[in-house]
Image (cartoon, rainbow, N blue to C red):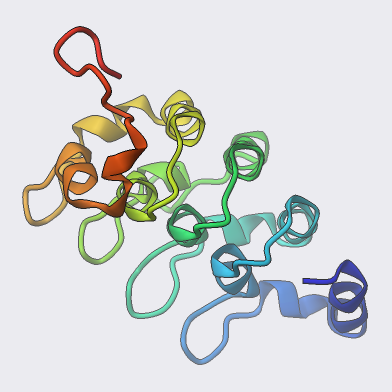
Length: 169
């Protein structure tokens, strides 16, 4: 995604960053899931519409952090910037929860998306757990914990639980 194109599309219509389309989605939802996302573009979007970070969108009830965690192009810098921006701007849903602590309509937290995206690294996981350490104790509507999701996921070869008996995570 080109920053120049972003600027050209945004400048004539500055309210677009905070506008929900008919599917209930903000541009932030789409940007977070785009494989060409860059840290700079994400920072611009968060600056233009910080409240977009908490917005639940579409039929899934997922916020942009769910989408970002599901994006195979995510890196720890993007994740850290996103969650820190949420803290700096005190972004929370109507119940006062950080976007990392919000379930989608299926009861899945963003960490479950992260563990299932196939490219999760130890650095990404530790970055997420710095923000919301309680995530590993949360269950979705099926009764699954993040460990269930990880064991079932494409990330199993990542070695994130290299030695679960002697300290593991």
